[in-house]
Length: 191
Length: 327
Image (cartoon, rainbow over all chains, first blue to last red; front, side, top):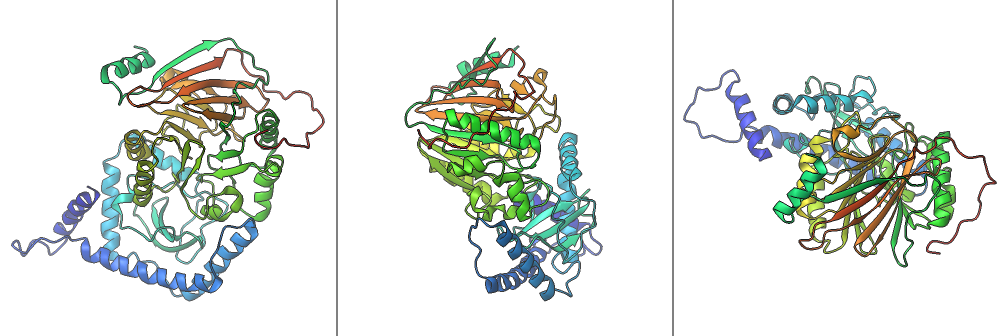
């Protein structure tokens, strides 16, 4: 179902883009396929990099020491920041995939009731007032806004427990879960 | 029509799929530190603690009260409903907001089984005393009870798929789910309707019996919904004073004038529950007889008619020794 919604919305997006409609008999394909494949490739490249850095530190098992957990997160974040010191906005959220994801999110919001929108706004209330940026730590003393449960299935899947989507005001961010590091940001993605 | 009456009629009309026939009576009862649990042999006993991690005075007072009850009701584990550590997550915060308040219980080898809240660093999954085993969500079994610990902050499709698989494999055990955000509540921030559209059909399909949630800083026993008994118990340290609305028709019992926690005992097909305030007063108690086959479940609750006191009694010498679990 979520795929169907995604396909329909993306098809609409592509059909209304400049230059479209010139070849009416062209075979219909999923217009999200190529941008999402590219997105998946870039996510994969990032995960290979962060995994190679995490591997150097050895596996983190459960521990009674919060100091050990915090130290590992800090070290991993520092290693990633150094390895990606030239990373910039849009490296993973390419303009093509950003246009599709933004359309999906806005369309999904438009189908939600006022009470749901209000609840999503409430979830942002406790989030720090900051402008998220690539290669910056998410502020550690503030909560992460709960991600809308019905929106998540519409977005391209991410490697479980390594990367996640989060919303910060009108931004969609990609966050490295263990390192607490912002990997990419998409401004104006969320109404 | 009274909502409970309509639920009961729906049960009669629909056979099972049916919501609980909740039968709640209100009687005058004591508000003293009465233990209302039967302490049966080999029962599964646990405490329910939600939104506890402030490290402030009232968290410590509530924690002491939990330990006072523990001495009479030795439970072997405590489930935490998220927001286990508010604010900073430095090592000293874990000490102040968890290890020190619950030291007596930890010393008594009580196991803590945490769910993650929106204020929790997801890396808490590596913190051994929370027993998440490095996972955001997990399942564990105690006696004839299967628990499902969910991460409601990030309900990705993989988690839902995992839940369905685990529920399907859980056989005839009691099925109890717990996670941070409530699917039903009368509190001002309101229920997580989006999450409900995803989780409720799964809970109903696989016969989840009871759900515990936090997030709202109150105690609330919800009128059973589609055969499931929901509790909101997010008041173990924070409080949203007066934030229950019994007139909305979904609250059987609400308590929002002090901090609170719950004690639960399950034996056979019966679950006994008691909600207790920071001062030790009983806030709610009752029994849930779970559904068996086509026989719908039944809830009998007793709400104290007397308002619980909000002042602690004069201090007694601090307790130091804990009884052995199961004694």
